[in-house]
Length: 196
Image (cartoon, rainbow, N blue to C red):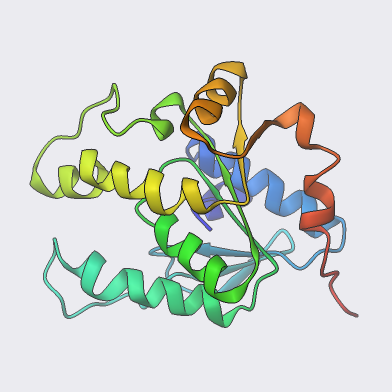
């Protein structure tokens, strides 16, 4: 769940999106069924063996500022739930994380939350939001919800370095650093091979 469709095509994209694209394409090359749900993506398509699926319909009748909460997050939850996933993965802070965690809990599947920045663990990040809509989606309230309803519900938080691992431990989050979880994650990700 997240961006990465552009990176799958080899286009410039953000760091988290690139990591999601690399993981998705790598699992697809190993014969795994990989579906990447991308909020705002215009259509379903197959890119580099990965099924890219829109998170919600392209149009909404709700006004900007409330459409995310009233229309798009519920549609995203339905989309993910309808896919009947074994494993859900997000990378970095996202207003979508709590919806992903809620689907994981309802469906009984594994939710892995990878950190993309030290700010992912902070309610008051070092980078500040500007404007009302930006603050609503990325400010302290949204970040508190992300920590409480996404990271705290993850089966495992994937840290990038020892500092994040220590902070996760202090927060009571089950976490591992990438090098330490190689033996654990493949069995979670490799449950459902693509049938021929």
